[in-house]
Length: 325
Ligand code: SAM
Ligand code: DTB
Ligand code: SF4
Image (cartoon, rainbow, N blue to C red):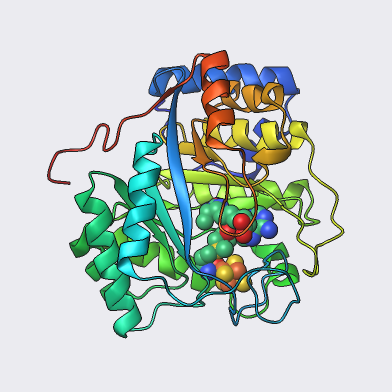
């Protein structure tokens, strides 16, 4: 039977997720080496192109206008500022540049036109380009594709059952609809979630099941550990353990063998030995650079030292894609 399956049952996902940790990691590492170059890690840089003031109520998010957090809100950056930042990221070894906006959804206005110019500009630097801008219509997805967008990030965040405990201003169905629009436009899908929101194992299993039973697996699956930010409703959540991260990463790797599994928010607090365990369990992508969107991330030099220590090497841009894709 092929490893690439979109018909996983919830029971199968739960069985994998709950298997003894060393067994789980061994299996995930075996799948990983069948589909990926061992030691190869994709290096991405994030930039918040529009920060704060978001009308949504995502309980984890420092950028929601209704919570009192310390973020430096700013309007949409200009194209030159963004391109300067992308160039710097490229010079520091990143091959994918991901631009995030604190929007509920994309509107067809001059700001979207500006984002289109940013996408064209970053693409012109020879980097893969990703956006995360909230909900997207089919037409908007087609425009982004036309401009040269490689991937679109839109996370499911948690299970359908737990979703309304975290976000009330949109539904799981809204999220899936945008993912469908992205897929239909021929853009790579980047979708994953956050652990540490107060969900239980069944929610983590449910989210992984939803991702792994989409008509086509996402090309990237970010696994975020909650960064508990002061002023958000989740400010007092306890930090997740490495065992929980490893279980998520390994299960995602087994269910979606070809996906890039991204060790996302929460890396700053993880010692190298913990990150190494995640790489062994099938993680093969990180966000580099000292800031995620609004919160701190390990410094570039620190990550370079980690790559050297662990024998990791950066994945080249557009690997495995036809030149005109
Ligand atoms: N507004 C758009 C949206 O919600 O899709 C794009 C930006 S939003 C900040 C992108 C993702 O960042 C969220 O879906 C969530 O998974 C992640 N995120 C936001 N705040 C986080 C936090 N405090 N800890 C971990 N991940 C977080
Ligand atoms: C994703 O899954 N994680 C990134 C990216 N996609 C957009 C964002 C993490 C944000 C962490 C909180 C912050 O820095 O504001
Ligand atoms: Fe807004 Fe996105 Fe933050 Fe939710 S996660 S509040 S939609 S920026």
